[in-house]
Image 1: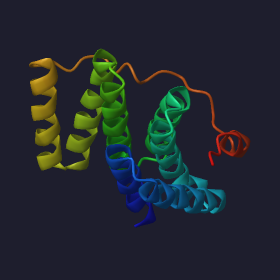
Image 2: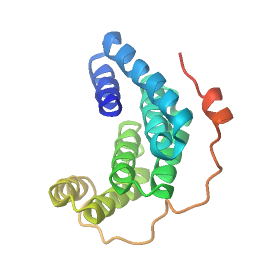
Image 3: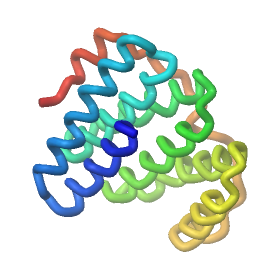
Image 4: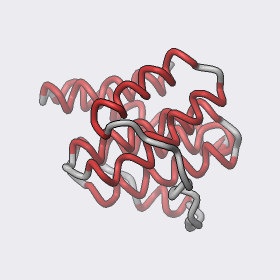
Length: 163
C-alpha cells in the first residue's frame, strides 16, 4: 500500500508541481526505508525505486539512474519478477522524459519480458504497443541490463537520503 502510494505521489508531484504530493512521496520513502532496515530482502528494491522516483522529481538525475538500476538488480536478486518489471518500466519512462529515448529501449524490453514471465499478459501487450509506437517493431536481443553492479549497503542508503 505505502509503496504504490509513494510511486503515485511522486508521479502526480512531477506532473502537477504540487509539493503536497511530493511530501506524501517523501513520507513513503521514509517508511519504506525503515521497512528495508528490518527486512532488506523484501523491501530494499521497493525503497530504492521510491528513492529513484524522489531523485527524479528533485532533478537529481544521476542518483535517480543509480537507484533505478539498483532497484532492478535487487528485485531480480530477490526474485520479485513483477517489481523488476515495474522498476524497468519506470526507468524507461525516466529516460524518455530525460530525452534519452534510445537508452530507454533495453529497459522497456526487459520490462515487457518480465511482465510476460509474471503472467501479466495485458500489461505485456500494453507495453508492446508503447514500444512499437516509439521504436517500431523490435526483435528482443541481448539484455544489456545484465551487467555487474556494485552492492548497495545500508551506508549507501543513508548517503542517498534526500530531504
